[in-house]
Image 1: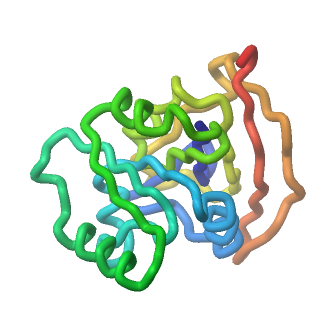
Image 2 (image 1 turned 90 degrees about the vertical axis):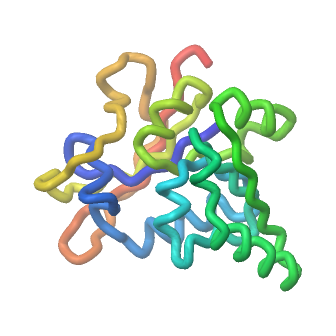
Length: 181
């Protein structure tokens, strides 16, 4: 499995339930990497999407701890996509192990963990690759963080993209691999 995340300084990923920054090139990168794949997320991440609709043309596995978190709006959006011939799927699970069981026969490069913070932490032990968009935005106001992969000694950066700019913020696409995986 692969985790995909955009981090600001000190591995900050969120502020008041939202992303630290929306970078169009990062959103395009996310779509390109995950389209046609399986995405594992938490209910808050699903609820943050427009109309609470699952990501189109992907299998959306949503990890929940309570069946009351199943969103009728999300189910209706999936049904609408199916009627339009899209391959959107929505599956609710109750544990990381249940999610792993669903994807065990898929190539590891076809499964992406997309957040939020608690799901990243729960699923990180099952991942051997992390696609991290590093940006130099200040962490000021951040209240949600991704694990610092450089601090654990378990990960090494295997690719570091060229710096790019968006509205004065420098960012780069990086790849981390778990050592000895």
